[in-house]
Image (cartoon, rainbow, N blue to C red; front, side, top):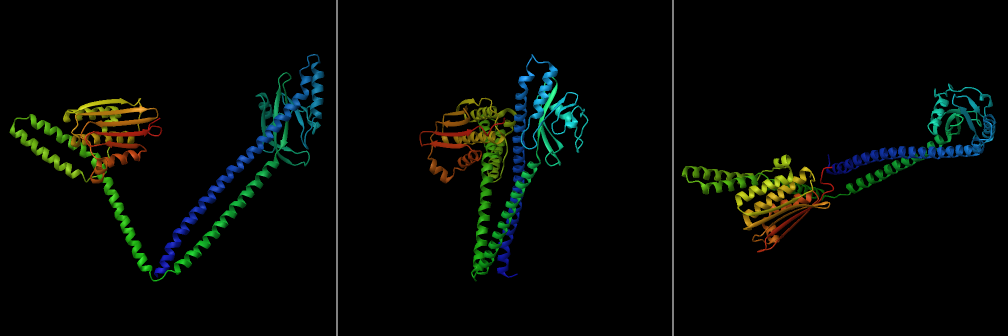
Length: 451
């Protein structure tokens, strides 16, 4: 295949794949959003009609309240007057009120007077819904809504009707009214149609843009001259360079994990053996210890090139404070330095990676103090300050020039900074020759503790 054809193919395939994927995702999301918007619109329309129905029933109840609450009227007379009032009430084109007693007998139905006096408790709509039973239940619960199929007076068609029913406790009557909501379905369908049209317009616009883009890519690619080979060679070299840099980054990651992990434990073991060798008198035993120290030194040199990411078992078993306390006791035992520790984390249970990072920072700092600081005293503070957690490790040693050390070696210091910044914390290192060293870690606890 000619180089130009390959370039065109390599240019178009990713574009087409991305375009198809993006178009499908966009259409799917637009349709999902459309369905949500349509449902919200429908719910809003139904809610407005429910409010209108409740207000209409409240007005009807207000119109009969003077009769219903008049103790001087005979109950039969009062009931007759209330029926007459409700029968005359109208609103809109098809708006009227109906009344049923608790047995399901119709007492008022101005549109279909032939139903008055009939027990309609078993009446069902075309869907088999016992609508009178449901309305009576809703009314007796303090008022409620119900949808069912009913014949619309103005058209004679059977459509969906939304009714609201209230309850007259003294007479055990249900007073209700309803609205025909077939217009809701029409409005919802119109909205859905309009949204679908917009989606189609957007989709076709994207297709046009893709076609134009493809045409431009073809034209530009065909215009590439004989320098294509050199351009391709340069691109390959850049790719190779990026690959090498990626490998270097991986090596850096491996070196960081090595420096913070097994190496510290082996150094600690070597220090214990050195202390032990000073107390032994038997030459054979000293020779065995010397061989052990030599083996440990070889192991230390070897593990400097191995990637290792472990969570100290003490953190899982006894928590960060106790793990740090154990670490400090061990450090005091083999270094002979004065250690002052203050722990106050207010029982916050840190996430695993956070506790491990703080432990590694303390571990690395103590190792550096023992190796380089010539200090006499070390202060370690772990305290919670409101929503922040602060770790301070301070020594009174010889100090050093921070910039120069970081430029030359300082792999441990860089590792500590990277670990802290990876979990969103702030790492601060202060040191001057002759004035000791102070390392401060500050973390926001909101996202770093278990609920």
